[in-house]
Length: 270
Picture 1: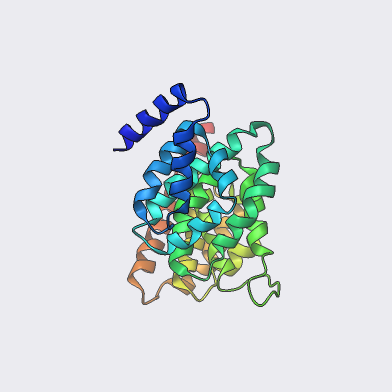
Picture 2: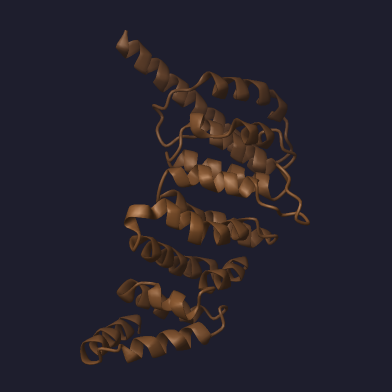
């Protein structure tokens, strides 16, 4: 059906210079409830064929309307495909100034979504939305972490860390580190030190992953990484949480493999 719709839009574009079918379809889809899953396939066709300009003109708060859908796991993947298409289309029109456009038009809504009070929505945003932005420009990582850290989430009072922002920042660090977007030297050690000592097992596991896991085994281990692991590993050896223990074993195994690769590389140079 989507292929038929795509073909109809192309034919209408050739016959009708005003693209009447496109505008009517877009208006109808945008007026439909955001929780109707079937609307996102046609919207994706419109964005891929004509860009996101028309959608954002008719519904300036379109991206905001997608955020509540992320609290529903069955909607999150399809909504995220549309979101990715909108972001890429929006930035493709400003290829020479991606960072400025991102800071002005995209970052505020993204940060508000990331620090959402709904845990399911936060999880899906970090899984589906954040990677799109990190892949755009390496500098976005630092801007995103800073924006989340300075975001006012509790009664308008700015705090350095809380139960919402710290897990989000550590999650983003883990993602960026594993994808090879940032080096350990580029990550704020203040957040890592708090993350690796957090009470939440998931936050601690992600902090260990941020330190140990890299996209390449050949990445050299820094002194700070070694000291952080040496100081905190004994404190996490007897945690009564199976998933945390599995993550910790994976981290240490990967860390040891990195050390062996570094040693082998040093021997070869000698």
